[in-house]
Length: 458
Image (cartoon, rainbow, N blue to C red; front, side, top):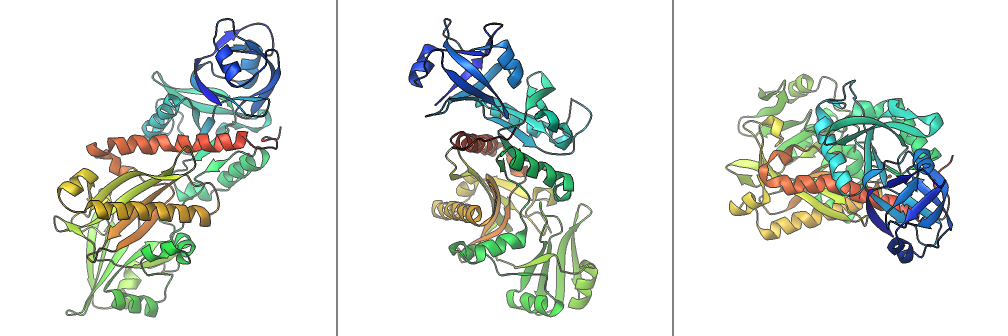
C-alpha cells in the first residue's frame, strides 16, 4: 500500500501528471494513463498516472504547486486499495501555543524538544510541522507551519494536516476559547483526527475507572470534602495526599500526617522552590492556613506505605503509547525516589531517577513485580481509552508498590512530563516515546484513507 520516497523529481510537462516506477504501478495494479485523486494533507487534485521512464517518482510542477507538496523526503506515498486515491503523507501537525517571534527558538524553551519530534517524524517518512491558531489561513485551507531540518527552523506554507497531535503546554491555554474553536473547526469542517486532546481531570479519571476491574489499583479518594469528612479520612488512613483535581507536574500537592502519640498534625508541601514541613496542633487551623480557598476543587487520596530505596519512598513513572496498529504498548519505565523532605518524587523537588536496570541490580523490584506493573499500566490504558472520549495516544502514569506487594495507580496524565529522560540509561525510552506518537498518527491517517465517505469539506 505504501513506499517511502526520498525525493520527488519535478517535471514542467505534461500538466496534471504523476509518473510512477513500474514496480509500484504493478504492485498496486495501477493502469497506465488512468485518472487518480492525489492528496496531500487537506489538498487534493486529479492527476493522470503514467509510468516513469526513469523508474523514479516524478510529479508535474502544477500538481506540486497546487498541493504545496515538499519535494524533499523522505515522505511516504500510498495507494489506497480498491479506490482511485493516491496520498502523500501522513502530514501531521503538532498543535501548540506560546510562540515567539524568533526562528531560532520559535516555541521558546520547548523548541529543542519539538525539533527532536520533527526529526523523528522525518526519519519515519512523515511530513510534520509545528503550528498554532495564528498560523492558520482558514480561507485558503493552508497553514504557515514551522518545519525543522539540520539547517534550523523555517516557516513554510502547507496544507492543513491529515492528523493533529495536541501538545498544548498548560491548562490555562487549553481553557482559552480559541483553543476549543480551532479544534472544533478542524474536526468538524475537515474531519481531521485530533489526538491527545486536553489534560486529564484527576477525579474524572477516578470515576471512569471506578466501575471497572481496573478499580482495584485505585487508592481510596474523595473530592472536595468538608472538614469532618477529611478528618475522618485522615484518621482512617494515618496520612493522606491533597491534590488539585486539575493539577499536573506535582504542583499544589500536600501530604498531611497525624501523629497519634503527639496528637499533632503535620503538613508537607512545596513552596517557592523549597520543600516545607509545618506542624499544627489543630486540624482546623491546618486547613485554614494551607487551603485558604477551601477544598472544593481538591482530590484527597489515601497515603500508601511504599517500597523504599536508600530509605526513601519509591514510585514508578510508566509511559504507554499506541503504536502503528492502534494498540497500547509500554514505552518507558523508571523509578523516582523522593528528595529530602519532599511531598512528591518529582525531580524538581529533589527527586532522583533510577532506570529499570539499576532497580533490578539494587533488588528494589523483581522481574515479577515489573511484569505486574507493566500489565497494570496496559490494562488501565485500555480502560481509560474505552471510558474517555477522544483519540488518546499516550499516557504517563505514576504507580506505587506497597510493603504488602500491592500495586497502586496514583496519577494518569495525558501530557506527561519528560524529566525522567534526563537519565542516561533512558535514551532508548526517550526515543521510543518520541517515535510512537507518529506511529499512532500514521494509524489514524490510514484509517482515514480507508473511509468510504469523503474525508474533507472544501
